[in-house]
Length: 371
Image (cartoon, rainbow, N blue to C red; front, side):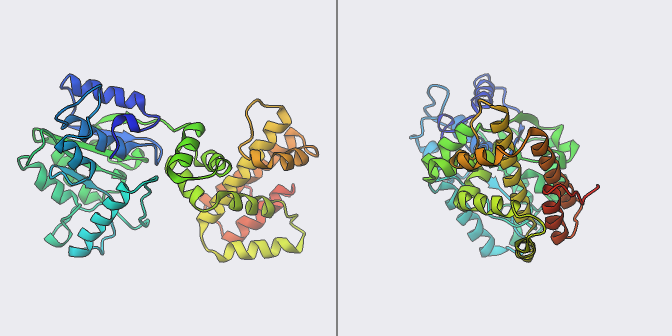
């Protein structure tokens, strides 16, 4: 795990954590919240390393003492990391999954969770499901630490606790054992119990800038500058989202989206496009199509208004200028409204082919959606 110094973009949050630790005023529980992939869990792990380091220096852990080395490898007996898992994982399979996920986090590059929407953080009612559960957290919190000055429990995606798990955790928060630190990390604090949030000290993590994300993608993922810039623009401040796009060849995806959204609705190719997109039955594909469409229209507005901000699709600037020459600001804004209408239709769970057909009609100036 990196030290504070190796985590980009969250210096303000780190300063607050350092100050609280230096004054001996760390709360019993933090709630780290912010966009996905901005360094919440990584900071929580760096904090555990800092407060248990034998030789801290310059407001950071040394990274070389025995506690630092164990914590950096996620092998310290007083560091417990919880994250969502499928309920079907039990016994040895559950333990293997935890080890595999921990190993992936330690690999070079940008770590990204790989779990389904059905994954959750459960209470763990029996020995078969105890590992990585809130039941195990409660058990460990009540025990004396093995080596560390402060036992640390890090819960990633804390909003995905089951109701039973959340209520079980509440009992720990209401009567916190000494020398324990809980750090709950979430991108969706609104989905959490108010009673849990009120018992944690909140700390917001800011979105990363596009330049910061580009630098990290090039450095850690080996992405090309053009792909990194495009992925960063679509990532909306999240390194995780941007890294996932960069891994999928974001330039090819963008080119495909621009081509599809440029097809006139009366063109026979539009029927084929609707059929192919609907056949995926993956609404995330359509969300991504809309994201690319909005980004392209934003770049057209930048060109039309003479903005000093360079287009995110700067590798296609010639095409942007060619298209902008036949447009005005009002027309581009109308197209943006058509894409927003498709977004609302998606939120309303409208039949997928209808969303795509309505989008193409709307971009051509024939609005279909009225909600």
